[in-house]
Length: 357
Image 1 (tube, rainbow, N blue to C red):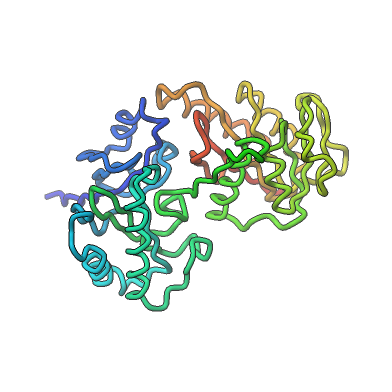
Image 2 (cartoon, rainbow, N blue to C red; image 1 turned 45 degrees about the vertical axis):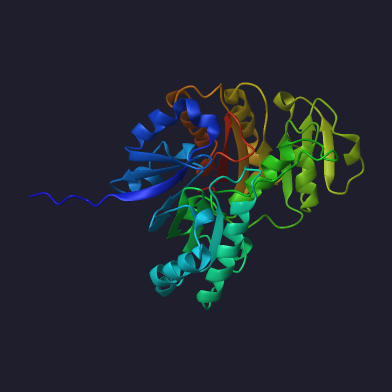
């Protein structure tokens, strides 16, 4: 007689940009018993974690967490919610020695600040009950050690323990949103690379100060500025000039040139290539592949795959596979991909240069 595998509920975060394909995505992931929660969140059941974490469709999930403690309730109308929740978490998770405890909102974009305060207060109380935590801040986390993540909202409390890498983010719910809409920002693209570099810490240490980046299609300079702020050196290529605020900034070499005609000088060694080019993605990845010979071994490529409006799952996946194949022929290995908070109809792909045989 066959033994049935127990089903486990998971909390998924599916960005709103994927709403047209959400139902098909859940079918592809073999999810059932799906319940919408908060903003972008869905509670769903799966037979195995492989359905969530190792599927070709996982790239459409911004964040995911197995549910090990769920408490559907109206916390706003409940006396003693913080203490009751904290004691329950102590009983269920303290013996498992999480490296840290982090709490967030199911509806982070809401103007109602109640649940933001509730999440903060809950974490504060739980910290008092969990001795010897090693990760006191998000930045302290080891990507490969388990953290206790909690999400709260009008639907209740939803918690689980997993490594940040398995969740695909250090924060409850994924990446930290970085606001670059301030009047003094050069462009919103700066938020994209800032978020990408934060996400990258799930897989490898930050590049050392003074690392040499080649940025393709850099104008007006939002990403360039973000890299320079991190003490990186940037060779910025574009036919259009950069914002004048970058004139004379240390570490910048701005070259007015067509990316299609640009070739680094012989002897150049790059630590990273950044491509957020507009236009056909096939052309963009071809430019990266052509220049990849100048990358040092294990050098990094951060590539934005811009796709047509996402109206099916298959079309983005076909483009994705074509990009990976082209990059592979240039000795570039894909090691992760994600849909960042700052992405719209696009994915951010991360490649490494394979060492030469």
